[in-house]
Length: 395
Image (tube, rainbow, N blue to C red; front, side):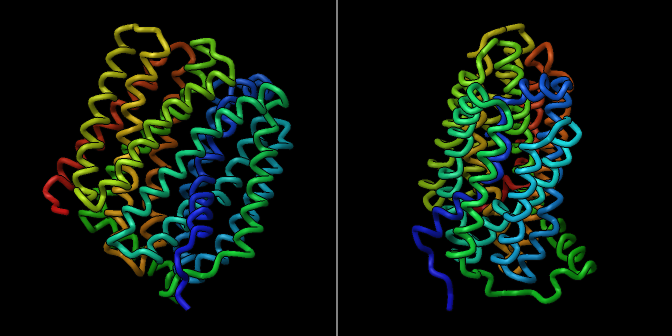
């Protein structure tokens, strides 16, 4: 019997896709405290973010085809179990090396939430409505980076940095229980050959040979790299360079997230009226302009929180327009390879995001310029890819 969309299923999909941002943003205010407690520098603490992204991306390459072969439900159950155990390991870590290793394992479990949540949307709604639904999901998911730094800052201030990982453990246990009791299988096109190595390579080769998929993938990559540059650099910019407390940093970060929420809401409202292509165009143009402004202010020596927050708000709004529509555009032509298409997209985005984050982490100690330049370059990259690959498409 086909699974029908319900309110509970919608909440579950939002909760699953929120697992990625929760696992990064919840402990962002604790990064400087982690660096001090585990006797490392900002680059070492930031590595817990970049390694997480690498694990998150690599896991998707496996979980996507697994879900095409065995179904969404069993893969989600196993990934949530891994996440629970890894979150406990993070909370108990006694060295930066142990925390980095636990974060990698945590990422392998966490990636099942977003990639399979998107695949479930594609299973249930088809290509025509997937962009609209994913935009609604992105709006709901945006509550995670809005609230997580606020709650994480409060927990860090009152209970220490380990409390963030305790909270993630509790959240994932609740998800595991709900999935066990409520989620039915949505994949009606099980592919018995999806896990064959040659078939996997053939699927990925087919996807990358498609100009539309490739363009959507890389346009989203630039937007994600810009977003993760801000995520990885903002704790040190706000706390170490501008002297904000962990709670104030959570508020500043959350204020920027409202831009992403607005972009996602506009995308959900307008995707049927004007189409994914026009929304992506608006996003790359706005994001590039605001990214260049952010870099210009940093290079001019303007040392004020507003010089980071104001242009970055415009960038996050643009990212809210780009990401759900680029995802829907890339997945639209592949109903039988939705898991593989989503996992490859996630892998490449996470890999580039991790690289951008590591570059920012190594230069962020004394200035916000590395963050600003990486955001600007990433958004200009998205603009360039859109111009050469997607500009001539018609909705």
